Every structure is written in C-alpha cells, then in structure tokens.
Amino acid sequence: MFKKILIANRGEIAIRVLRACREMGLAAAAVYSDVDRKSLHVRIADEAYPIGPAPATESYLRIDKLLEVAGKAGCDALHPGYGFLAENPALARACRENGIVFIGPSAEAMQRMGSKTAARKIAVSAGVPVVPGMTTHLASVEQARQLAREFGYPLMLKAAGGGGGKGLRLVRTPEELPAAFRDAQSEAENAFNDPALYIEKYLERPRHVEMQILGDEHGNVAYLGERECSIQRRHQKVIEESPSPIVTPELRAQMGEAAVRLAKAAGYTNAGTAEFLVAERSADSESGLKFYFLEMNARLQVEHPVTELVTGLDLVKLQIAVAAGEKLPFAQSDVKLRGAAMELRVYAEDPDNNFFPSPGTVTHLRRPLGPGIRLDECVFEGWTVPLEYDPLLGKMIAWGNDRQEVILRLKRGLAEYAIGGIKTNLSFFRQILDHPDFLAGRLDTGLVDRMLAERRHIGEDQRERVERLAALAAVVFACSTPGRDGASRVAGRSESRWKIAGRQALLDRKPRP
Image 1 (cartoon, helix red, strand yellow):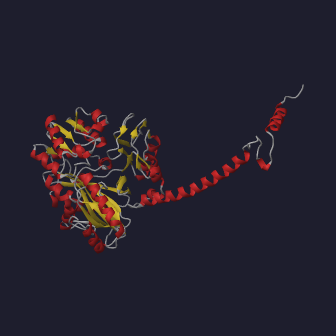
Image 2: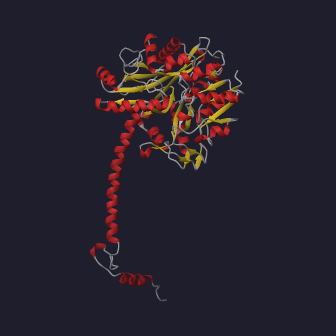
C-alpha cells in the first residue's frame, strides 16, 4: 500500500479523498491556489502546499507544480479527483515517469477512452451501439458545416478531451454553428487544455443513463449498476439517482455487459463510467428501450455517492486499493443493488437570475441531518466562495428503501438546509421534487428546460397581475393623499384638514358625567 497520497484537486472532492485516505490509515497531502488558502480542504488536511495563483491554468492544471509538491511531500501516489487534470493522460504519464502511482486508469487506456472520438471507435469495434456521429476530431468550422449537412440538425458539438458538460453546445440551425463552435472550443481549452471538438447527432428527449465500472490490473472488470442522470440544465447534471426508474434487470445486464466489454477492449482499469443515451419504445428490444454508447468518463464521477449508497461499496477506497495492485474484492454476482439513492448538486448560483454564479461570503450555515442523509461539501461559515472555479458547494445525497422514500427524505433535508450570505439553487430543487413528471419518473434530458420555460411563463402572468395591483394601489393612494392646500381628494371632495381635526377631537371627547 502507499505511504502518502497527493490529492491534486480542491473543494469537496479533495475532502472526499482525504476522508478515504484516513479511513485506510494512509497519509495524504493537499494542494491549494492562493484564493483557496482558507478553504476547508486545506484546513482539515494534515499538510497542504501552495501551487500558485487563482487561475487554474497557473495552479491546478500545472503538472510540473503538482509533481514538484509530490516530491517535496514524499508522496508515492496521486489521486486526481475529478475535473482539472483527472482525464488528462499527460498527468498519468508524468506520474509514471516520476515514480508516482496515478490512482486511475493508465495513460494509454485514458488516451483510448478519455478521448471521446477514440472511445467511439472502440465501442463500434466491441459491438456496442453508438449515437451517429464522428470518430475523429473536427479540423475547422468549415468541416463542421459540411458534416452538419450530412448528419442534419439538431446536432451536438462536444469536447473530445473531457466531460462534465464542459465544451458542449447544442446547435439547432446553421446560423448557430460558428458561435457555438467558437464557444465550445474556448471552453474545452480552458477546462481540459484540449480544444479538440467532434460532432454527434442530437437525439430528442433521450434519457441519460450511465453504468459504473471498476477494473483491477488482473483482468477483472465489474459493473456496479446504473445511475439515471437525465435531470440536467445546460447539459450539466443536476440530480442523479440509482437505480433508474425505467431500467429493468434485463436492460441493466445488457448495458453492464456492454460497458465491461468496452472496458476490456480498451485495457481499462480502475473506476470509470460508460454513459449511454436511452431511447424509449424501441420495437427491436424486449424491454421496449434501446441504448446508445455516448462516452466514457475515465475517472471518478461527481455522482459516485449514489452508487456507493445502493451497493455498499466505497469507490474511492477501491480506487486506491486497485491502484496499489490489489484484486477486486468481489465478483460480478456479488454486486447487489439495495434500495434507492438520489443526489442533489448544490451550487452557489441564483435560480431567479438565470442561475448566475453567486460568489461571496457564507454568513450562516445549517446542515440537514437525520436518517438516510449524506452531505459531501466544502462549506463553512465565514468562507468566501471564489469566483475563479466551478461554484459547486457540495452534494446532498439521500438513501431510502425505495424512490418515494428518497424523495421525501430529500424534501425533509431541503427544509432543514440553509446557507446564508449567498444565493444557492436549493429552492430550485424544491420545485423539481414537486414536479409531477419527476415524481412519476417521466424523465428526459430536456425536462428541466421545459420546467424553466413553464416557470418563466407563470412569472410573466404573475408580473402582469402585480403590475395591475400596483396601478390600483397608486390610484387609491393618489385619491387619499391630501393636495397642496391640505385637503383630501377622496371622492373628488376637498375638505379642510382643520375641519377634519376638529371633528376628530369632538369624536374623541369623553362624555360629561
């Protein structure tokens, strides 16, 4: 086993890895940028090292600085968390060249599966169905125009080197293509140090269902059940749950076996996630559903806690054990899903102002507690949410015997949860958890957008009513306010305030005994 692990990330994921290390009796070291000096992951770490200014390109994305710290701190392994360099094979390769174990897939497997276009090629060769699209990178916006005519609109522009909704744009018309290409390329460069894009056909109203896999270095790969991730806003997952409301045991086995086949074809080890789009009502499927491979996330996922709660497995500990050369401690037949779990991603953003980020100082914090609630977060009173990074504050995860109990527990948790001083999306979750389609499990990747459109429509109606009431109040106020001569304007009459005061004095006079 390792002597000390460098956690090359920040925020709640750094805390999550740190906790796993402590439970395994392993030493760990954290890193931080200048703006993260007072962050919770730094405060609770046994040791932490500065790696530069706030911009990620000068700190968390600097491989040379991370390896310098690893050497200085005496680390023999590195956990990348998720985001930043987690799917960058250059970091895995640099670790190997410096005698440090990278806790994740090998650089070669990451290159094959971390690249979305390369992964699509492998999926085709492994007999896994894929969404129609490219298997190479786009060379220019001109090539994108040509291929768009071939695939037809709408289509998706996607970053080849990353995931998590970054570098992703939906394009519905030829006019939208140039701006979408420019924005997606810029976002991919900033998020993954890789501006490469590719095109994929956009499926209307699909469900997003992903399969967690875990492989060791002895040829064993297992799937750990699915996560339904259809509740998304701007292609970013908002709520994830397991099991999916529509996945049957037969479909779970088909998707799981396809994910394992894919991983073995790529020589993949450690934790990974095969993402699928699921279309309903397919005539050629026994379950009435058809799935298409979307991409492989060659890392731990933000939503991994829901899998942990329904399987009873600690994925971070397993990642570390597998990276140290240990065999998977279970067989596929040992993996059982128990109950249901759901995760809410809590962001510092304003749902009433187009979800704009809401950095600032947290002045008050009340955490949800009680049966079935888990909170993975990085918040404390007095902490200032930085503007420089993703505004994810943490995740509230609930477990229950079934989906209904999970939803009720999340509602109870939301009622207890309070974060003051900044705006958060907690109120938005209350709306989702009450929506009839969500409660019925009628999910697709466009549901949240339709909900927001409904809310805007309702908001316009309410605004009109408020404006009418305001106009009525203004008339009443104007009629009841005295004019310049001190007389009331009620009913068009003009009365002296002296007369009114005299009458009031008579009314107030006590009767003589």
